[in-house]
Image (tube, rainbow, N blue to C red; front, side, top):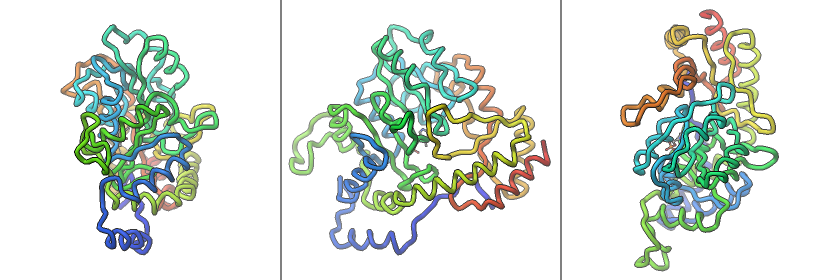
Amino acid sequence: MINVTKTYLPSLDEYNKHLKELWKTSYVTNDGPLVRKLEEKLKKYLGVKNLSVVSNGTLGLQIAIKVLNLRGEIITTPFSYVATTSSIVWENCKPVFVDINSKTLCIDVNKIEAAITGKTSAILAVHVYGNVCDVEKIDKIAKKYNLKVIYDAAHAFGVNYKGRSVLNYGDISVLSFHATKVFHTIEGGALVTSDGDSAKRIWFHRNFGHEGSARPDKFLGLGINAKMSELHAATGLCILPKMKNMIRKRKKLTERYDQLLSGCASKMPKTVQGATSNYGYYPVLFESEAQLLKIVKYLNANSIFPRRYFYPSLNTLSYVKYNSCPISEDISRKVLCLPLYYELRIEDVGLIAKLILAKL
Ligand SMILES: *Cc1c(COP(=O)(O)O)cnc(C)c1O
């Protein structure tokens, strides 16, 4: 069976080295030494100033909205994973959907201004499949209208734009380290910001508002429990040194798909000029939903399980106010992510491509 993704786990020997230390001290959570070590290593690896790990990316998005004190309407994209929208609604704000650019599949920056009202407080954009948003234009619009900017960077681990981390754009960027992502800690995530005050607020928001372990009776403000445990941090510490190699393998698999599928109708987002890729996903856009369904059925019959990602378009969710986003609605019906993960074999890519081409 070949699934859309397969979680890479470090060797048990390697993981056990961390466990042995943990078993000695019994210090397994609450801003422990492995969490701190992972944060230091991630800052260096990613090239960012402030980074706080959290228990998952969704809580990361919710904390970002809290830290920036967002109210009213938040302009966002309908083409993303449901957590982008649900975290806005969960924080009692209203998502206002702006359609996507059909080439990059990120929010269409030329349509943002028309959606701004007196109630707009922020833009929450997504680097879809790791493809960089038009961060410069978004910056410009945010300055002009005095809006905050959050990037859902769940797909953008290690992606650089014009020579530096794309996570440095906007007020806060949020990563996900879920088991299905390019880099993972099983469950986890991180918030990145260049603003020192926001960094401090993120730090206490994720831990009930506590000032720190030295003063357990002192609270700096409202908080939630979004702490990462030492066991999760240990997973990340085992995997981080392997990232370069893992991304290299993903690149090889991606190039093989490109080669084999180049003749077919599928046209996918090209990496934005000046940006690097982490080869996190291999989305294919079919001519119609009927064609996609036919191919999914055929692949499933051959024990291959791609995923409709993202589907459905988030502006059609039952708990949001619908506004029409024809490009996102159309693309979400026709896009399919093919299996792509570190341990996938190059021959498997050949088999998957062959099966697809046979049904087109
Ligand atoms: C995975 C993902 C999230 C949610 O992250 P979790 O760590 O699973 O909570 C949010 N947004 C996007 C775009 C994602 O792909």
